[in-house]
Length: 140
Image 1 (cartoon, helix red, strand yellow):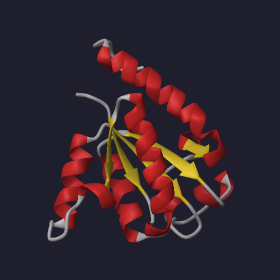
Image 2 (cartoon, rainbow, N blue to C red):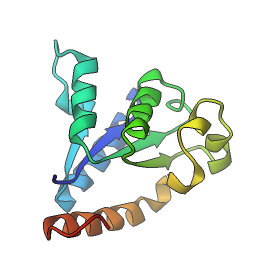
Image 3 (cartoon, rainbow, N blue to C red):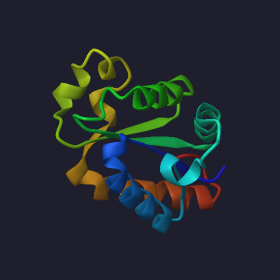
């Protein structure tokens, strides 16, 4: 299965999510972004569930305005249930604010959190996973 990244975000973070999707695609992976991949009239829940099944990992933007959005929490829960890779990108939140939150704290732990200023390191790691996947070697 080719690497496909599901990008979860609040509607207020759409511009940032688009930039991340562009970088993910530039590295050679696919990206699912609801605003680009869900059409008017689609069954939103069905599209999200299908995308989760097709994606190999979740990148979720965790911001003060998005951290308790029901769809963000739902999407994290889906990936957690499927035991797939989750990377939480924090912006405007500290690691402690995320892990101490009564909602997010049960879904993510500090090991999966990356400050937005460290996104280049995530992209580098993703690039390695893409290369390994393309070579047909087990997960890096």
